Image (tube, rainbow over all chains, first blue to last red; front, side, top):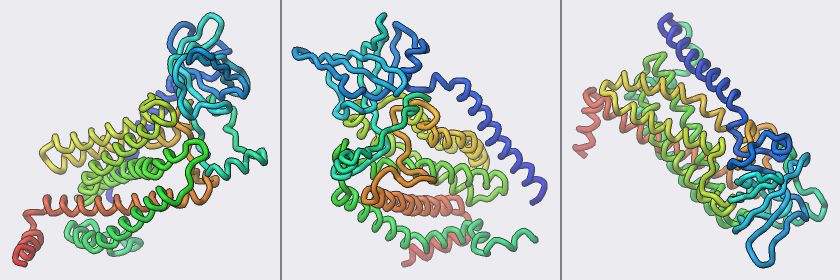
Length: 153
Length: 254
């Protein structure tokens, strides 16, 4: 390779590596701010600010969903398998909302530590399967469960 | 030149616009047939024969459009950046033309990935758009394509334009691993990848096989559009060359 090409190759490598390092360090410094939501563990540790709009994400705890009989109000617990946060919401839930399903709720933490949600989004995992397979796995008790850390990065 | 021996002859010939034009012309019908066959077969397989998902039902089938377009949008960007780098270092005209031809295709694929993602997001997540790391970095990829296209057309001199866009493309290359690993590094609404290089896919074979067909079909389709654009670009830029004039004369004589 002639010296001129070699020099240009080095410049190109320098650009790619330099930008990579710079962006990597920036993202590392911003790490927490890039997360879409706080996990229940972070909320329990007081990392989430009170009284401002935040998002909380976790799995809906089995048997925790309570629906009001006269309104659309619903309340449930979300967990990352370490800590649990209560969520209260009035409105229509997404189709995928169910117990054992990952969700992301947007709202404010009140003084009791309950998230007053204004929006609830369903988070699904990367496992897809036909209904028959899901039934069979369910019966055998081998349904894949997303790892607990998935809500706690 | 001693370092030329380990590369086949046809590879060097690709650097000549005239040869590249002819080789692309020979490959085009094969890739067109491959792309048509795979995309039509894959679509029918995906929409009719593949099973529905146990949670999402039929709305999950949009994965067969969403995943290939997202993969291709990123592959196309990498090709654009690598071709740009080759153009920068070796001053190879054809590489510059490849990089220039990639941008509009990649931008359309990014739009397709973002749109199908939004259409999928509404019924499953309950929202068209969320500012999570995956969606945002994909949107940045789309803006990078727009930036490359705008920069290229803003500079009059072809070689300066190619240099400037190659630098921009190389700077933007950092976004590709961010898109890929965004779902692993941060809490996102977007689910992690179903396909991993090291593990078996998180879906049964009757679901991922049509997806694989669609991905390969998208690659073939990408090759077709790229070669067509490249041939146009070669003719446009070499319009003063003798062989182009001959070619046009022989075409108009028929």
